[in-house]
Amino acid sequence: MVRRPLVAIALLLAGCTPSSEPPTAEAPVLAVPAPGTAADATAQDACDSARYRNLIGSIINESTLRENTNTRIVAPDTVVTQDFRPDRLNIIVNSAGQITSLECY
Image (cartoon, rainbow, N blue to C red; front, side, top):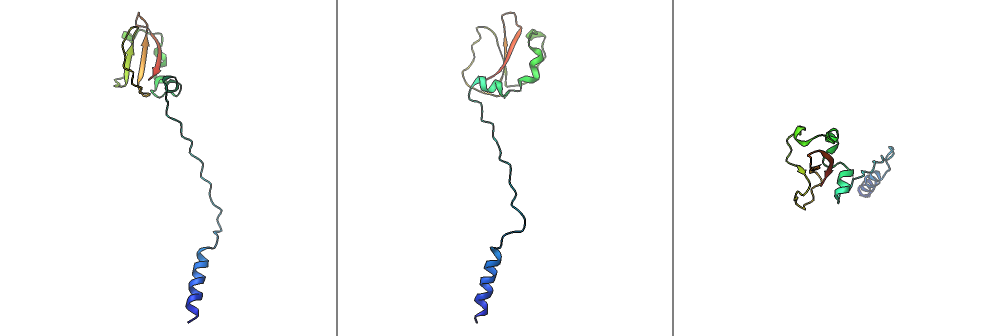
């Protein structure tokens, strides 16, 4: 009858034996913080503005843009909403319709 407890103890101890393989270290995942301001969103290119950088200096009517619901043209004296959407591409134009900058907000 003494053998059963010894077998149970041996099985428990076998489960506690260290593995012969060294533990693997996982690389930490570094999350990029979500942009909180228009400047941060533009710096992180949250709206994919780099795709349109070649349009800066051209006239908006002569420019071809892909259809995008997250794009708006902002001319002088244009009233825009104050909601912050870092994925929205804002095409800033001057009074002549020339694209002067691209911003994310």
